[in-house]
Amino acid sequence: MVQAVLPLADDISFRTGELCRAVGFPEFPDKHADLIREMLGPGGARPIDQPPAWPCDVADDHTPVEYSLAVDHTGRPAVRLLLETLGASPSLRTNVCAARELLPRLAERYGFSLAPFEAVAELFLPEDEEPQGRFAWWWSVVLRPGAPPAFKIYFNPEVRGRSAAPGLVAAGLDRLGFGGAFDTLTRRALRPGALDRYAFFSIDLHTQPDPRVKVYLAHHDADLAQLLRAARAAREVDEEQVREFTAIAGGGTGRFRARPLISSLSFLAGDTDRASGYSVYLPVRDYAEDDEVTLRRAHTLLTRHGMDPAVLDRALAVVARRPLNEGVGLIPHLSLRTGRPHTGLTVYLSAETYAVTPPRPESLAS
Ligand code: TRP
Image (cartoon, protein in one colour):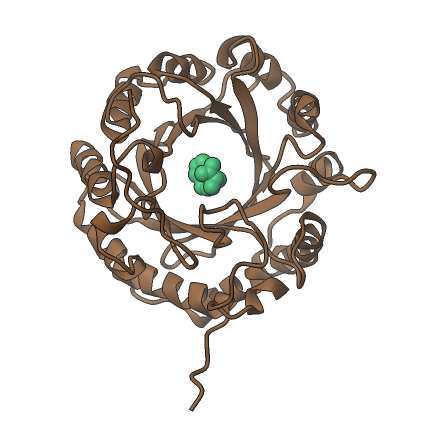
């Protein structure tokens, strides 16, 4: 008898449910399962035993989904997915088309406004030229028990080429009412020269009228000093928290020469120049030998912040398909959120649908 192989979308949707239950959601409604399948788009129908049809950059092995667990002092974690909608024959263009088709359906179902999207779409989704780079449109969807899912869209500032990125970010901020923010970024957060790049520009899709924007910077060949510099573009960042996070997650505060450190600055209604929030994302998989090490660092961080590490163990038990010391990248990033409304940690988890990165002989952190 031929064993049926699951379509990618069913596999991801099933695992998302397992993850939610493992971290304490009382239930995982069918409509969440359907939503995840729908968001993966026509390309989600591909059986998981076939190699990926699109070199999706959401995850190293090209799975178009990355899970994350966001925790804070409440002890009630949120499960998040970073996701790329795939067209039937995936490409930057067909993936954007599939996402565009989905957007109004989601807006109607969940009651969010399309105004912020419409304000910036023509900047970041070029119709007059071929989109460039590794992606044009990613989503994040946040699941919490008893609440409707919350969505963001991530755009690629380099979709019209690298030199166009600052202009796109400036125009995007301006159109969403954060006219003074770009100046803050360039004056306070970016190093002169080419070592800091605009990595993502995200908008929240929500029911409130106020737009919320996050600008992400990738800091190549950077150290703690550059993170603190970027953090100063936000109000009220506890620098000691950033230092401690970097030392623990990165295994040191020296120079990070492999994958770049990433900062994000979040602008909320009323922010005219400085941002309300600062987050740092550390690609821990490039700076650790294997996932026993990445998990130990995540535990240390959770414990330092008074959060229960057991929730992460339960999450890993349903996501991991291999022993932790047999690869690196099950925990690809660790992240610290500072500023308003309160501090939190996010642990990213890879699906490893298609491949596992072998352990590194030694850590690269300097
Ligand atoms: N895989 C890409 C990277 O590692 C994009 C990405 C996925 C990412 N999740 C992320 C970037 C979390 C920063 C933080 O760069």
